[in-house]
Length: 126
View 1 (tube, rainbow, N blue to C red):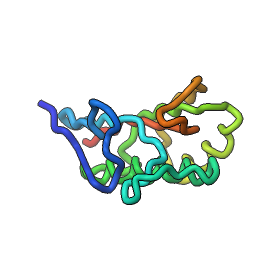
View 2: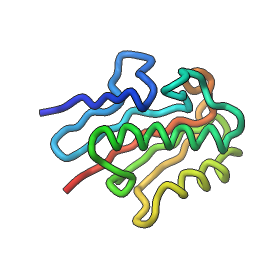
View 3: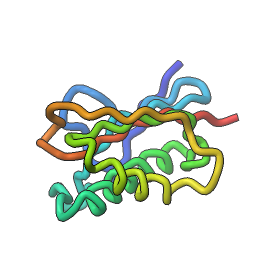
């Protein structure tokens, strides 16, 4: 059994997918980019603010499902340039207090709307 998670606190999907899907006690969160849900604008002032917006979007989806960052077990970070890694890593790390999730970080040629960072996550409760 699966439940579609959708919140107005995170950007609406820009394609045929859901913000997240809850299957049992596992939450699968689609890749989030730096779209501000309120304005609909991209937040691209710096790689730091872009990453913060991505993490805030993840936080909104987690919250809508009754989860938090402490429930994340796996993330995938997609970067347009691996040179952004140190800043992205610092911002990303600030959202976790301990027991960091498993993760991979990959550089890709292009991301949706030509952003610099996209992050997806899997969270578990129980």
